[in-house]
Image (cartoon, rainbow, N blue to C red):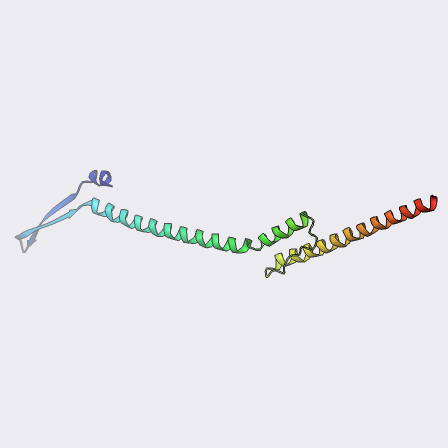
Length: 140
C-alpha cells in the first residue's frame, strides 16, 4: 500500500481572494490523492472481509444441508450390506422424503420377493432330493 501512495503527488492550488478590488487573503486547497486511495483500500478490505464471512457461512450451511439430506443413505447402505451377507430379512424404514420413501418401498418389496424365491427354491430342492431318494428306494 505504501508503494502505491508514494507515487501519488499532492496537488496544491492557491488563489488570491479579492473583494472590491482589495486583496483580502489567499485560499489554499491541497488535495492528497493518497488519502483517497487509502480510503478506497480500507473500504475494499472491509467488503472483502464481509464477502469472506458470507462465503464461510454459506459453505457451512450447504455442508449441514447436504449432510442432513444424505443421512438416510446410511441405513440404505446397511440394509444392502445385510442383503449381500445373506440376511434376507433386512428392510428399510419408511423415510419422510418422498423419493427415499419410494426407494424404501421398492427395496422392501424386492427383499420380500427375494426371500420368498429363495425359500421356494430351498423347498423345491428339498422336495427334489426327497423324490430322488424315493426313486432310488423303489428301484432298489
